[in-house]
Structures are given as C-alpha cells and as structure tokens.
Amino acid sequence: MSYRLPLVPLNTEVFPDGYAAARQRWLALLAGLPFNIDHRSFHCPGAGPEGEPLFTDSAWIGPEDAESVVVLIGGTHGIEGYAGSAIQSEHLLMLAEGHIGLPEGAALLIIHALTPWGYAWRRRCDADGVDLNRNFVDFTEPLPANDGYTELREALFLDDAEQRQRLLADFERRHGRIAFEKAVSAGQYHDPKGACYGGSQPSHGRQVIEQVIEIYALCQRDLAVIDLHTGLGAYGYGEVICDHEPDSAGTQAALSLYGDSVTLPLLGTSSSVPKTGLLDYAWHKIMNERSCYITLEFGSYSTDRLFEVLRRDHRLWAEPVSIELRRQHSLAMLQHFCPADRAWREMVLFRARQVIAQALAGL
Image (cartoon, rainbow, N blue to C red):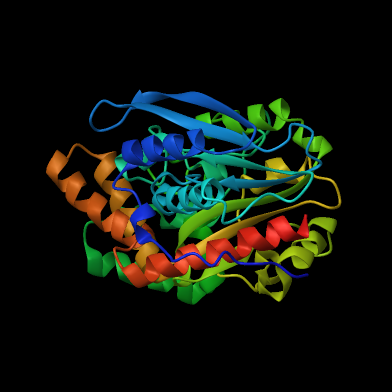
C-alpha cells in the first residue's frame, strides 16, 4: 500500500496551552474548511479551573454518504488531549490550506476532548476519578475483579517511599512484571480514589461515543479508528497498538493499513498489557470485517515513572491538600504526557501524519 506524506514543515506551535485555548483554535480551524461539515458539541458537567464550560466536540468532514470513515479521537485520557489537539489541529490546518485532501467516497470524523474535565484540570480521569478507557464494561453484570490491585492498594498509598517501593518490588518478584503492570493499570472497579478506576456507570465520554456511533450510522461503514494517547512506550515514538483478537478480521485490517508496525497486547508484542473496559471494545462490536481500531500511543518516559506520576496524582486528589500542591503536580503530569521538548513534539506530529495518511490511503 502506498501513501503520500504532506511536505509541510512541522510546526510545534499547534501544541496548546490548555483545554480552552485548544478548543477555540480547533473550532476556528473547523470553520475555515472547504468541505461539508457537521459539527456537534456535547456538554460535560462541571467546569474548568477558571470556571470555563466543558465540551466534547465532534466534526464530520466530507460527504454524508461516505462508505469509508477515518475516525480520529483525542483526549480519551484528559491530559493526553494536549497532543491529541495538536495532531487534530495540524490535520485541520493542512486540510484548510489544501496540502492534503480526502479520498473519493471517504469522510473524516474528528472527536476532540473526549474527557474534557481531565483535559482542563491536567488529569487523566474525569471529575469522578473515572478512567474512560476502563469504563466500557457491562454495569448490569458483576464487574471485573483485579486481585493484584487489591493486594497492592495499601502499598500504593503509603507515604513512606522506601517501604512502598519494597512492597511493589516484592509483588513483582513473586508474580512477574506483566502481572505487576496488570495489577496497577489493567483496570479496577472498587476504588474511586485509585488509578485506572473504571467507574460504576457509563461516563460522559462513553455516552458521547455511543451517540456518535448512532448519529452517523457507523456500523454501516468501513472504519479506521485512531485513538490518540501519550505516556507509554519509547520516547517520541507512536506505537500502533491493536487490541483486536490476534486471529480476527480487525487485526488483519490493521496489518493491511499499518503493516508490521502493529503490536498486539494479547500476543505480548506491545508496550501495553491487556486491559479491561477499553474504548476499543465499543467499536469492535459495531465493526465489519474491513474495519479496525488502533491506539496510536506516543511514549515519553518509563512505565515506572508513569505509574508514579499517576499514583501521586490520585493521592493528591484523594485527600484535602492545597491548590498549590495540586498545581505543582499538574506540571509534572503535563511533562510526562506532553513533554516540553521540541524534538518530542516534532516526532509526534510526523508519526501522526504517517499513520493518518496510511489510514486514508488504505480506505
């Protein structure tokens, strides 16, 4: 499969200062596009740090009857929306300036700030501590258990760093690295104060996704869904993570679009371990055999550093602490999920162009 990358200089100025500025720019770029546009805003309860209202926005770009659709999702994990907005904004800018176009019979669906509260407050979760990417489970059935998290919960919230590290290392020594990563990050459903909490009911972002799928009859179209994430994996590299079953049509579709760069958690070839309640699963249910869902994950720092910055974040929000302490930690969160390094940001933009071009060419 051949594809063409736009020969446009990489401009890291598209990385926003925050949620409100990102949304304003996104809407302005959308208004300047020479295509059929259907824009919808989904209000999210709560407000940002300055009292600003919160919205998830979607934009259908292209013919209403498109048989093929590339779906570009940003901000599934709130703070990861910084990079998501940058990628989406750059793509909108290149469309507006005519550097790229849409294949005949294809449309682009862009979903901005799927967890806007977390984006605005520089957190990964929503206002209730819910990780949207663990929220896609059947809440009418018994919820998945994570015995490893239960065993580690007390250690994760210990103030004594030396004792905490000793207990975590002991768990890893007894159960192995994969079991340790699953315990911390695979998802848990009983501790709202802890990381990767899947919630007790469908969250704002889940409701938006379910509405968008119905509004645009996406079950009747060929789909290439790209969910933009940051914070896990090799520094600056965009890993194409596929959570379809290894022998499924979805995995074959992903391989046909993105080639041998595709990694699969279920085969142990990914920087990610298998997880419960992923957003992926909502799309898997409605996809035909020509469609696929991938997470485009841009790495930054080590997995242990990721776990520590999230542990610290949830600890600070679990107890009454000063606004200044939370503000200082939000800077550490931002540095992990969107490093203030021009080279990292250039790598993100280049790799995103590559993967989006592959999806458009393949469809």
